[in-house]
Image 1 (spheres, rainbow, N blue to C red):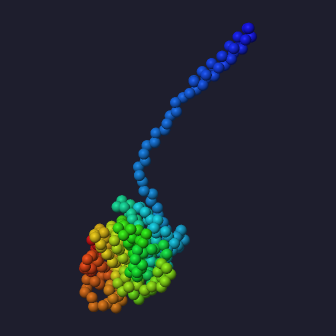
Image 2 (cartoon, helix red, strand yellow):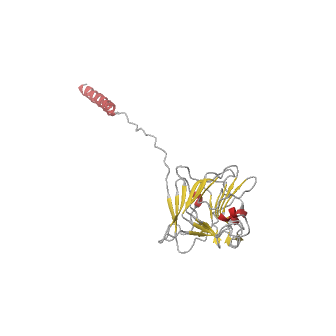
Length: 269
């Protein structure tokens, strides 16, 4: 009988002890509180040129550009014989910058339209427009007609040889010829575009901006030497003097050539 009690007591004691031990070890978990982080734009700089990650303009994925990105185009002894279509957007506080990195004597990198190639990544919303420019800023075929490339800065480049005397290879590999009024830089349906310290030469027009419903607005053209460009280049046609600067501005419904001679700074509105 004693033995039975002892066994029972030991058993009860063990049960009681385990229960007490389990209760004493239970603690409340602390849940960490996360504070919201401020939104930040990830800025990237991409390098194109000899010894750089991208050796040609066409090897760089231009459609991947976003706000705050910079593309440094490095000088090389021979021009970049390539055409460009720029269709992405920055923001007012974080524009897209396309910058020419000068050579050892301060030479501007050259983008030359004569016998230039066009990367297949550049899909123009209207294919015949390939004849209109060496560098074009407008929406691409994959973007809606209402899309407006904006907040793009281009600086310290020489862009030349968009003219009917010169040929180029289009984005399908076919040989094409520029139009008589092709431009070094053509802007269509874009806003807040800045062309600064660029040399635009030997093209039908140095700079052409087409405005539709006010979308090509607040675009600045500053300190850009424009030489040997204009309607009828290289043998000047007898056109009015205002045309001869090579800067043109068209607005709907009636095209109009803007008097830009010989201004150093022109705001396209």
